[in-house]
Image 1 (cartoon, rainbow, N blue to C red):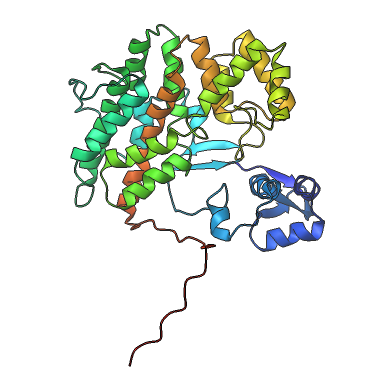
Image 2 (cartoon, rainbow, N blue to C red; image 1 turned 180 degrees about the vertical axis):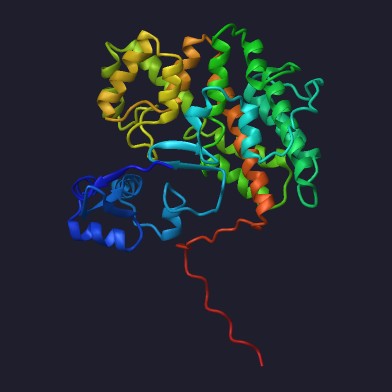
Length: 391
């Protein structure tokens, strides 16, 4: 699997440290290093590790090791599903951007769920079990309904759970579409939104690229729920709750807000600079795990180039922030080009990421990892001294 290696001088420059400090980071295992094949007397350093430490320094936090680990820091769980290395995203060792060239969401599900047989073969259309004013409300209602009625995962065969996972995904898509459908998930969405021709394939690519992203906030929430033995739908519901926040899946709403600001302003650069002047971020740009650009955004832009307006906004945002567009921006740009409903970015993100939530729930159950129960670093008032034991 490819990795990006940089020189000691570049690592020092990015971290803003002396050479001795860089050596100390490497000796403590915080930055991987290896000999330079062109000059064995020199060492190269893992750019991904340098980026993580740079982020930690920029935030200026004095946190415990556990706190750092839970914020783009050290790994906290063992998983064989997804990793980010060398600026690329991999599902079980396969490049997600390359998979998006031909795979369906169902293909990725079978890969991540480690299926020996196709769990989607037994699916059949049936009436939608819930109603609601929009796709988000229906998603919550469907998963809550199933969470309250489905079986727990303990004591059940892996194939039975995989079939249940496929039905959770299909029911969720139908609920978000407000219609009972059949066929691949991207085609169900296409029929709902009346997307036709070659553009249907764009929806397929989006779902593949959003299927999983290692241990992000919503996936961690889903995995914690799974560690209690909760049913698959309950784990997905926990993931959806975390995804709905404005710093995660709800970020596309903020990107749409920035696009509206850019339309009202003299130009997009002015709108971006005004946000920074107000102490606000420019949403849709940069990602801590991809210092050189989000490969998912690049893959989507290559498949469906931004409109002239969105390209100008992307250029302006990047020039002001110094960071290229990320997945959130690419989703908004794509949905605007396809003339999809305003909630389409969240719908696509939810449908795709549900495959990852279910994969992590299945892995947590099969790994037998037990309850995920971190400890808190208490900083409140000191408790009273313990009473002396009574004779």
